[in-house]
Length: 244
Image (cartoon, rainbow, N blue to C red; front, side, top):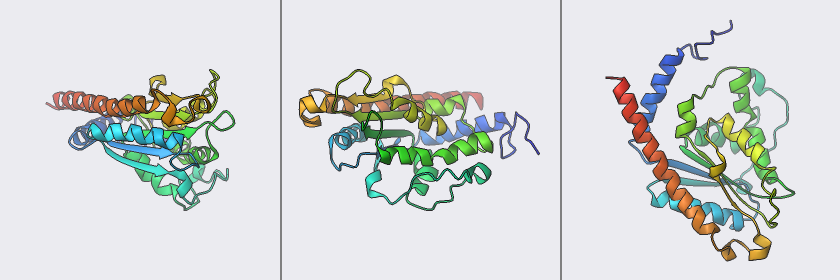
């Protein structure tokens, strides 16, 4: 039976769901902001991972609870395109990506994806990871099991960190739509000011030689946590006022 437009897949009304999300936000405000960084670079401790590390350091110094995942160290496979998830909402493959896509990303308050630019886009490691998130797309648009309201996007920001050897003005442009698709799927608010990019690695001799990139990433991580804490506090106050 097709569900009415004003109910979720679990049968609760939209109003009930929004109330539940509001209470969830009030709970989250009482614990540290969870920040998840995911590196898609195959080069360990290279330019991109160092940029991500500085972002996470800034987040930690602002009081965030940080975790870093390096995709190149995991055992996982690319999406097979079998569309089994269109029927079940679950991926048929059982590998290292499953707990990340089903638990770590959804439970994070801030998600930061990091990838160098290879052949004008993200790495194969990061692309395979994002493709495997197709299960979330299936849950949302095929099975109507997942819905993210406006508040969720506001309280779950997504960030993209990237480095590139070249300095051409469009060097990052072809990566943005793929990153946007991932964040939209998980209900993460991703806007142009959430891009932390460092071109010109060839000219600067690597990220350590860049005059501003690492400092900017650190400050961005710090500000991300502070800004989200402010939003959480405001949301909790609004929820408490509505519940009076």
